[in-house]
Length: 366
Ligand code: SF4
Image 1 (cartoon, helix red, strand yellow):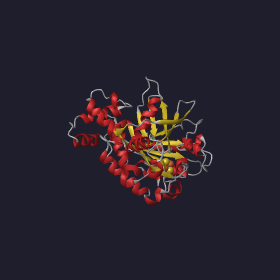
Image 2: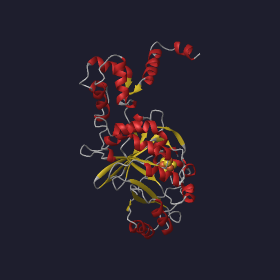
Image 3: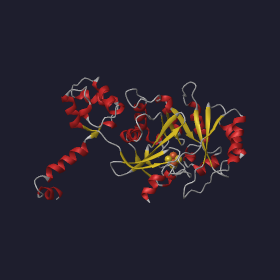
Image 4: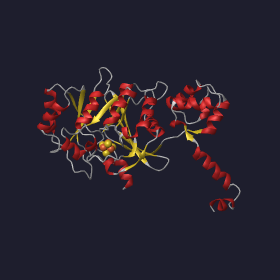
């Protein structure tokens, strides 16, 4: 019936419709790894070494069309055009903070929205990127968790966050560090995340040094060891409690992978020499900020080469938690310092904009 209707339209409608289908069927080259581009070339008897040239044009130079790939033959460029598309990230909104933090809201092809945040610090410019649309884990302190889970992000959608963020910077500013700490739990989108990490640290890809890339997990214990085996990037664990009772309340994933299982996985993480696992500890008043909590943390992390980031909670409209007073935070830090831990109190950046992960997208959804 639909075809019948289509055939009765003016003569230009059917070709236009077919062309649209054709375009939609094209695959985004940014979803292809180097190996997959090689396999594609070999499938029609092209030289596999050309894959590295194509890969570098796409991920290192970030070109927007195949015509710009000037060291490839015209025939190969035509073949690429017939087979693939190259996505362009679409920035839907940007919020800028007085402290220089920029939050970008990106619109995806299916009209879903994700966030990434540029965080300038003295010696670095970090991009915090999302790995899922929403998140299934529902941590009590997180705005993204409150809005539920929609889907995993594709490799191209993670890479496009880097291109979008780099695109809003002036020429003399470069992103120096990447953290997968935005919307979603990266280790629940493992296959795409590992592809993205490999491209992020490939010299002809996005070109970041592995020590400048960090994956942050809420504690998907079985995937931690695998991540350590398969990449050399840094690991951060969002810990936030020193007892199962408190962590169960804050982070439901703890019921599946309680502290002992999580920390065993961290102990087995094959950390690169001279590097530490980072434990993130969001401090919430009268929830996890007592001296007793600090003392428990000292015991819990014994034997793990680590540093601890204390992050005073940044309240958002529907949250039930508060930021602890300054003195409480300092007293907590002192207990850890006295026990020879490296402890940094990290200021929440971008407090005058929708700084919490998920807030800007939340605004859009009303
Ligand atoms: S804190 Fe991270 S893992 Fe927890 S709900 Fe938010 S996005 Fe998901």
